[in-house]
Length: 457
Image (tube, rainbow, N blue to C red; front, side, top):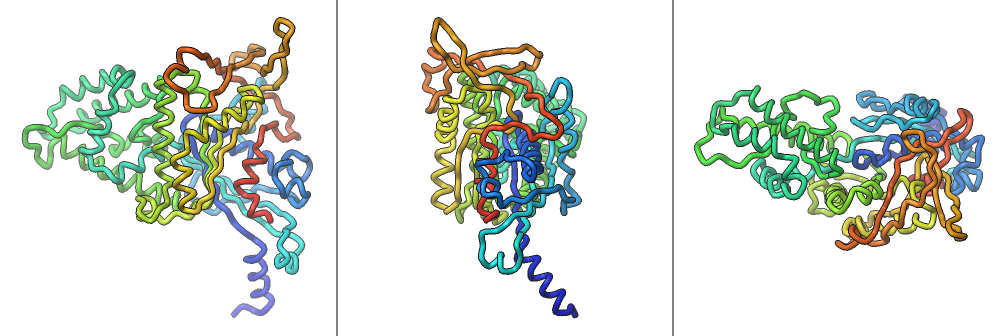
């Protein structure tokens, strides 16, 4: 039996230590790796720098410091923070490698609490933060749990419009040549499945975001596994036996539903407390109407994952406990400062349906524009005697560029926007940083205050 001293120490530990699990997601190139790297970097510098003025605990001088500690989930790969910092501190600086699988990192924050009860027990408290990184494309698969193989196949064929129809030509030709009623030949299925996967990659290369299944383009540890070797098809007119191509496709789809999609949500999603969804609104604006509409459709699919009503699929399956969601428009430094409010307003328009649902379910939701790692400096240029806002930075090719990228629409663009207006988004390198200095950011501290500020009171 524990002695009284040990029992008191255990009680104090439970009272003074708290824990939060923050999930970070977003579609490819939204900036997940950059966000987590900057978040960790900023918090590690709080004891020596005033780098987070919009985080209340830091501004009030209550945040004492932070340190990295070993993660408790030994089955999840470590987030590659040191490798990311190596890229950012190289000459010239480079962006870290993007997310391709689930990873995790843990920080321990020590702070002075405002709580009278906690202050009676100790002058300081501890908040442990688990930050989990995972590809947003995996969230696009949640609707599959509510669809059988034929229903899902139908949805994929209905999506074959515009550029998708052209990109799918090789896969559709291979599918037409396949006898679905014939006895299953795994090699044949593998070849057609590769054509389908190539089509999904081509969609991403063309600036499209809605791809299903999401694991096909970001397979993680499942790369090459037969569970990722199926594709949509129309039910054959003839009889398809239990050993036919069609039957094998159905079986693999069911395995994907249960062993991949459901398992991910059960093992990971149900443990999250807070969620941040990073959204790159600028690249689709640059790529045109079809890309922007497709990104919005993909974002709507992701938002379905955060519908927590009693009748929702997520509630029935996993009973999630997320109580706060932040949607953040990234790369705010790639537009001039007066356009930041437009960027936030545009994102709010895009997530409006989810906002309504979250409000009804008493879940906090917020939108803001951020730059996790600053790549440009804002200023003005003189044109015909007039001072015009501009940004300056080094492009990916190393060219020094000063430019006004254009105006970000405050609302969802109408059809005529794409003919009348131009938006010239340029990709910049991260700004050089010193090894002993925190990296420069825009409103990352505001995002932090929303995600963990209440935990530091």
